[in-house]
Structure formats: C-alpha cells, structure tokens
Image 1 (cartoon, rainbow, N blue to C red):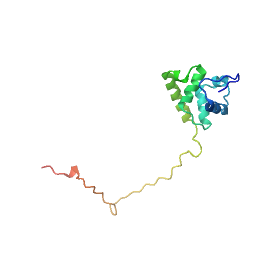
Image 2 (spheres, rainbow, N blue to C red):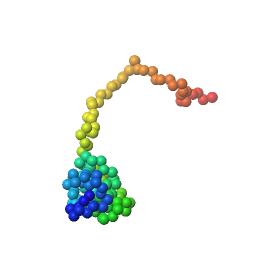
Image 3 (tube, one colour):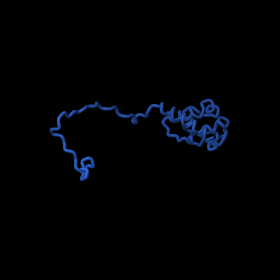
Image 4 (cartoon, rainbow, N blue to C red):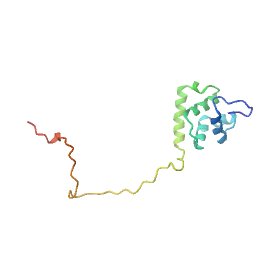
Length: 131
C-alpha cells in the first residue's frame, strides 16, 4: 500500500492495498486511526475474503514489523476478536438460511398398518435364553 508520501506500507501487497482503499483506508495514518481489527472487518464487510494473514499484516504494518513477528499471544487475541466481530456481520445475499417450514407431528395410536421392524439377520441378545 502506498502512503501519501509515496512509500510502500509494510506487509501490504497490491491486492490488500486495493481492498483497503475501497474501504476508505488509504494511508498509514488511516490504518493507525482505524486499527488492524477494524480494518480487517471493513474488508470482510465489503465482501472480500481475506485470510487471517491480512489481519496479521495489518497489525505488523501498524507496529512496523513483519507480520510473522507478531507474538502468538497477540495473534490469538486478534483471531478471537475478529471471530466475534465477523460473526456480527450480516450474511451476504443468497447465503441466508432458508426459513424453516411448518412442523407437523404425526401420531400413531394403534399398531394397525404399522410397518414391521426389519430383520437384518442378527440375533437379539436380549431374547437369548440362559442355559
């Protein structure tokens, strides 16, 4: 991602930079102001499918380090927080669960017309007689 001064933002490639620009994040200052988690959620909300590597890259860009240098504890915190935030997002159109149909209960009071239990050729151990 190119900042307003023309320098490249660390960890951010052209595809990620395009996603960020489309969500209103155009400079290092914008990214710092929004934060890595909110920036990641904006990208998801825009309909893109970023991996968690983008989340780590954004955090690294803010901290000024390579994304792989983000400590495991911080990565875990980011993943948990991202999961919570992403779960609040509405499902994309066409991906919604269909409405459930009506539930009907069928009750059989008598055994007339009931299907016999299938015989799979196994002996029932409960009916075996003790010798």
